[in-house]
Length: 393
Image 1 (cartoon, one colour):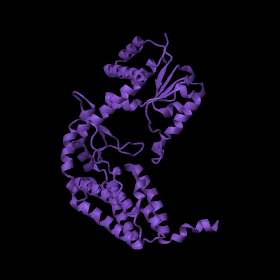
Image 2 (cartoon, helix red, strand yellow):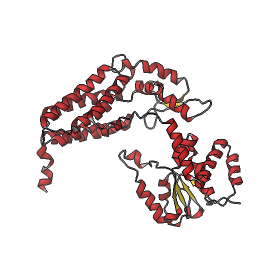
Image 3 (cartoon, helix red, strand yellow):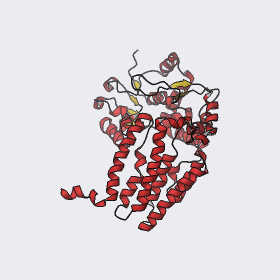
Image 4 (cartoon, one colour):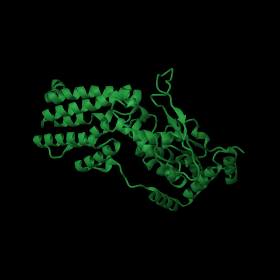
């Protein structure tokens, strides 16, 4: 008469009240204050970043530690870890199907004392994406019955939709890193910007040869982070990425039938500001934005010119200053790098790694990065200053 099993994603359910915990994400399960009183089964779907990531962008998800906490509290035999989100995305096209999928797993494992007919009726009465949720529930039951067969289908589905990897992170040698970024900068803007990029990297390579460092670590750092500053994701680039064909290809691979695109944007020239925070407020735009994006992408040649209407915003001015500041700093490094300050030079070249986000978030990161840069530059110019405090102790 009363269903005493929950699929939950927030820490609001007392685990002592449940017959089973089908947790998504895993962090929710271990955040329960009385997990030792929890039922004899818990299931994880995927590694989902918590709020810690918004406060610390360098935060790493402690996956193995979390899984061990669950095993320690519930017992190894009562802990079942499943790639639910991966299955949901591969076989149902959307991670939102993870919850009914996990419900199906828990039911098939005999952890929920409610009949299949009752659960399916509840899905039907809910009235939201009934067919999709029924399908996800069935896939969950199949996963519990024959996980190898289901995972084999997942691998097949992923292989059929996988695109050739274009990620620069797979490039490890300086030559590959530079070649990929030159091509990207030509797409982003033009040949002139690509030459500007390569010229600076080449100067760093020459300076490294003078110091006698053959590993190329400094040149690799400049190749990565100078590119990051040059290829900011501004209005023209967002428009290009939406209209270069890859975005729509990905959408059509994930969704069938008729669909409508909606965009939530805060155009700096038109968006209103929140009266409390002072930040730009996003609003919804319809499918016609794809046409607008197509036009805007063709205007990328205006970027950085007096006709660039977006370039007059404070954020774009700041981004242009960051580029010229970085070029000046690397010029100083080229002129003064030596064996004694080489490692500090690499740290300086990697400063843009810490500049992230947009708007006020980016402004805060820039300030912190500039403070760090000033300290490192002092060490670069006087390598002995870095050891001075330690020597005094």
